[in-house]
Amino acid sequence: MIPELGHFALVIALVMAVALTVVPLWGSWRGNYAAMRLAPTLASAVTVFCFISFVCLAIAFLQDDFSVKVVASNSNSLLPPIYKFSAVWGNHEGSLLLWVLILSFWLAAVATFSRGLPTVMLARVLSVMGFIGVGFMSFSLFTSNPFERLLPGVPADGNDLNPLLQDPGLIIHPPLLYMGYVGFSVAFSFAVAALMGGRLDAAWARWSRPWTNVAWAFLTLGIMLGSWWAYYELGWGGWWFWDPVENASFMPWLAGTALIHSLAATEKRGLFKSWTVLLAIFTFSLSLLGTFLVRSGVLTSVHAFAADPERGLFVLVFLAMVVGGSLTLYAVRAPSVRSRIGFGSVSRESLLLVNNVVFLVATLTVLFGTLFPLLMDALGQGKYSVGAPYFNAVFVPLMACLVPFMGIGPISKWRDDSVYRWRSRMLVPALVVLACGVSFPFLSDQ
Image 1 (tube, rainbow, N blue to C red):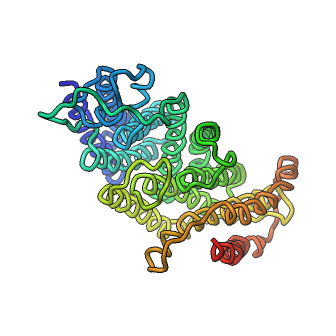
Image 2 (cartoon, helix red, strand yellow; image 1 turned 45 degrees about the vertical axis):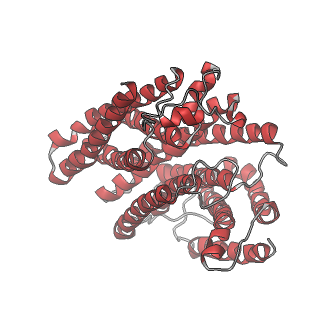
């Protein structure tokens, strides 16, 4: 009965998320304040039902309900209770439910602590987050149901949790990592909501920045803990082994680091408005890409969750919808609201631009190296493996270039310049082209 209750709660959460996506957004379009004011209530309802669903799955694990397929596959009656609980997210289905639960927590937090925002803005933000929730709840219910039963052939005992996962790291690492991953959906939602309203002023950056900082902090802690866990558990050759799945969490961190710096410039000086919105879209898109890589089986890794093409296709379609829709909106809205403020060649603004460019190029080099084997395989060029030699040769020099600016940046000042330097505009594409040119020779040797 408990699993059925959890399944029913997840279905109700999906219905509430659909309502959250449609009703407040319709209200903002029609100017209906009654519909817009429903957004926080619907967000709270989504959170409550997601929490009930997660608790039901946890109870199934703790009570050794081996009639539930995911429990029978990932637990055992002799497993200590703490590992029975962490086994809830030590598998594909349960970890996806944790993803949904954490998204609902972010939803509730934004609804609770952002009541000072204009009603229209809050309604749009929560609607965008509701749409993301619809995608992942649908993914969970239709392709990865955590409450699927093994009836009538219920096993006498479970298959046990993978011994590598019977570690305190499993208790802390995935929740922290997901808090960061999912937390970037808030910055993404604020950016899309600002584009919908056609006002990319300093206000949206001020509202978005605290949430982005918190998400970045969680992701940083999650990556640090994961690196430590992998190092002592598997004896890898260092803190960062450039495993494809590890790269999947590292890329949003790099883009998120650029984003929190860019948000500062947008909030303080009204600079980089369009660029900051694009970074917010790019950062969350990388989080979704990481979800696809981990759950599709397209890349080989010691800790990928699944190798099911159907699941991978679902995430890929959702990724295309989110990225395609947001970039289309950006293409329509951004040109009319770009920054008109100039800045000096030697100023805090220019140093922040350098920071953004270096982190973006570093992100693209990691992305290129991670996806290169897939590209070559798709083109029929054989199997390729890109490892530490490429990443160290390309990534380390980029970070070395950044170190001098880390000391200069904090003591520099905001400075105006009546002429916007055209060199600033050309810096990003030039360095991207340079990075690709430098990367390709190293890739040919892998």
